[in-house]
Every structure is written in structure tokens, then in C-alpha cells.
Image 1 (cartoon, one colour):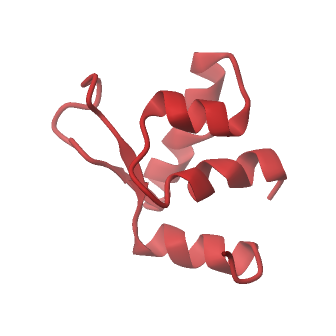
Image 2 (spheres, one colour):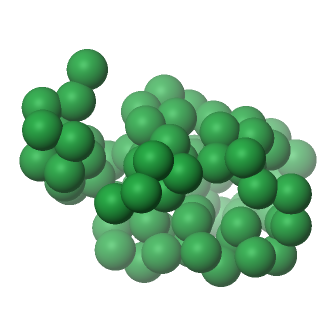
Length: 80
């Protein structure tokens, strides 16, 4: 896992907006970022939306779930 990729789940340890996650990754292209970072985390059941019924809500946030926290802990050698 590269540092850039690892920054997204690290940021999602607490509730973060899409813009906050994108800033953590340091990527400017919104579409590319969506397809390569939050979407795979959601599909792998590492993260969840705080408002699952409204994925495009302006108040939408993302957070790691237990499976994601465990995987991040394992991949980063213990996390912080």
C-alpha cells in the first residue's frame, strides 16, 4: 500500500467528507479519485457512508468500519 493510498483509510478513521478524503490523498481529479479510493473501500466493506440512502448528499461522510480498521492496522504494522 503506497503512502498516498494509505492516507485515505487513515483519514477515514473519523468521519470525513469526500473533499477531505481527496485532500488527504493529494489528488485533484475527482472522478479518478472516486474510482480508485472511496469506491474500492466501500466495495471491500472497509468503509461505509454515514448517510447510505443518500450517496450524493452534501452532508455525506465516509468512515472505516471494523474490517477496514483491522486491515489498515495489519498493513501499516500496528497503525497509530
